[in-house]
Image (cartoon, rainbow, N blue to C red; front, side, top):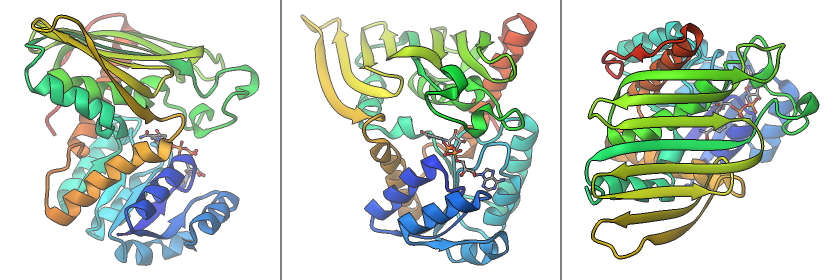
Length: 344
Ligand SMILES: NC(=O)c1ccc[n+]([C@@H]2O[C@H](COP(=O)([O-])OP(=O)(O)OC[C@H]3O[C@@H](n4cnc5c(N)ncnc54)[C@H](O)[C@@H]3O)[C@@H](O)[C@H]2O)c1
């Protein structure tokens, strides 16, 4: 398929490689950083677009990938959807519910086809975990969780680890709970359904950017009565990832050596004499391109064969509502009761 890139930064490269691996090509790219755009256009042998050329290239694309910072998107969403071109939108869809409402209105007006980039949902190790839970082999949900720590943007003196990013730009920063815990909300609700309440505390580690939380700890009550918890940190030099589902008839743990690594799936049901472990070669650190490939393969399959998108706009909106509820809980020091936040 012929794909247009709006935003030509780090993750756009993995998107472009996924498109090429699927037999397609990148027709053009746009970015406000002209030097970065030139490097990208050379690397992917695509047109280096001016803002004025965007409409023409959008019209000729099979879909567009939008990976600008999440608070810099509305104009591009309107351009892509009004041309009736499908949109792959990176998570988080926005940093405020006000922007999210505008995106919902545009999607309704133009009947937009949108996938939101919750890429971890499509990784082989998580898909296996999800399939096992969905089969009912572990019974009803009792306790589910995600604990994920490692060094992130803003870690180390003068951003020594990752360098500068929109993430630590005071005009664009939204923090970990909105940007990254979005993945946890997507994954955990896919395993055990929606939440009823949320209680959260966040902590930032850069005094100059108070809205940039780098640590988040929260507990949720699920509608089905299970308990859920998330603990994430971008300020740990050492890394680890543990996601789990404990049910009435068994449990399954997804373990990784670093924040986004999916190395091993260990499980045991009441009927098994001992636990078993499946080993995966599913590494974000070593092969981010492969992680992004799976979700593009899904999106292209949906577009070509009219299938339902697993992480549509509604999922992006739902997850942003959870992130904003978590921040509200932290700000106000109370448990937030959730309404039917998943409906749009
Ligand atoms: N799904 C995933 O696993 C995953 C992984 C990484 C990043 N992301 C998401 O992708 C998005 C981008 O992240 P990134 O790591 O690529 O950041 P990045 O800073 O590397 O890239 C963002 C690009 O957007 C450009 N840009 C900024 N403002 C713009 C504007 N107004 N118009 C056009 N271009 C503009 C920047 O110049 C930069 O090249 C974020 O929302 C992030 O959360 C998702």
